[in-house]
Length: 295
Image (tube, rainbow, N blue to C red; front, side):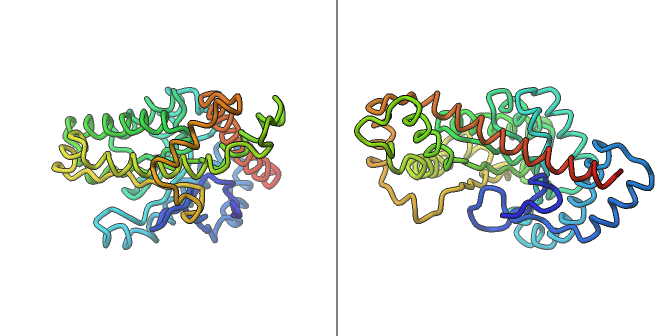
């Protein structure tokens, strides 16, 4: 997928199951960039203004879809800088600034669901800021994220905000698990099967989907539903036809990891780091292109 001028900073959500949705076109990008260059704007300020303007335009275009779906669809997702993923305070400040600059109800802020990112996600939701949690690699992190999302919505409702207007989505980035497993085996000896535990990413997505279904029956989720809150949308990066495992088979695949000498937590940590690195690299490339254009 071509990231376009924003290098993964701005996407739209429609129906379906893709990790980031479709890239949002911004026809006025070049003209806007030339105007910023004439005004002598620094790179960081120019990038922030471009993302905010692009997000507003995209949100306005999708607003009819958002309203027609009862606020369940037609969202635009804009990202805070990936290098802030482990700094909760800076990420919350960045999310608040971006949310305020765009000023549209169908905006969600893309936030990496790192360990520190969980408190950021709760804080944003509690303030009525929609969140798209990304870089969710492990089932353990997904379970913790669910608690963070529910806590944020509960605090929003307690503060008198309308939970129905606080949107949330979660992207399970599982494809990197297979890559991390193969890399681990290459570094530590392949053993009997050099290809590693086949179907690890697909099994992870399947079990995350099962967890997502079970959340709907929980008391916390039902209590929020009575107040109008919607369940988070679950997205993934493994094709649907690839995760046709049953529950038992999916757990069996995860259970084979020790036989390969693989620690699940170490594997998922490596996959998370790789995903965050890719996001940061795309954002740096975008900043470099803007810096060159501003000269």
